[in-house]
Length: 54
Image (cartoon, rainbow, N blue to C red; front, side):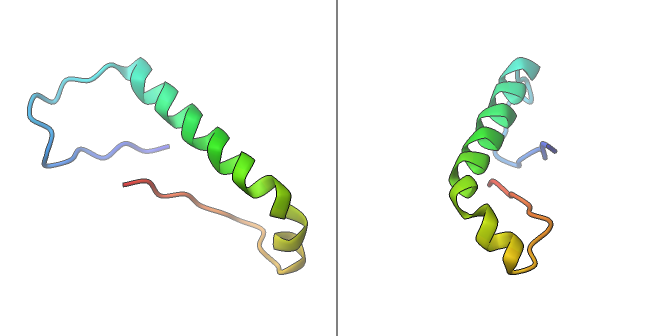
């Protein structure tokens, strides 16, 4: 997981633990959403998946 600084950030301060929780929650939600479809994705040749959150 990569965090990119946004131009909208005013103070630049953030808790690294918040980033870890965000990354964990996003990864978990991504996996839960795809689990029912993994067999179909594999059959279609999808071996790698990516997630971009903005």
